[in-house]
Length: 182
Image 1 (cartoon, rainbow, N blue to C red):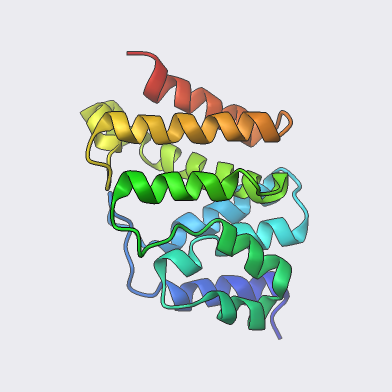
Image 2: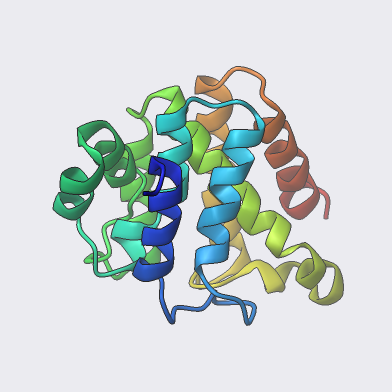
């Protein structure tokens, strides 16, 4: 019999089966596992860690809010939903603006999950950034400027709502390096 954390990790491998990250030949599940580990390493409560593991499930897999609600309960499902962009919005800038609006009302633990998620993305991109420069950071944004503005907008929310934290400090350092020192 799995513990809850073990069951969530097993579920992640099922949910993300066959999906790869956009910039590297690695299974997408790696990102989710790393986010959960980052949160666990800074002693977040179990639900926050579980939301961290699951944060991309609604956005990137066939599983829905109701699936998570039935498997893990309202608190975890609600946290994942808040951290999920509306994929029906095809325009990058509009989708990101909608997502930023969602985050403005999120509690600090849910925001910390987003900090860990974005931090993990920046850490994963570091070697590409050193090798290829700022354009290596872009995935779906139509320009580096749009990507930069999105991260700076997130940084503003994070720093307003979250007390100093090692994850936020690391995020701020990388944002400064990637976006503020040109």
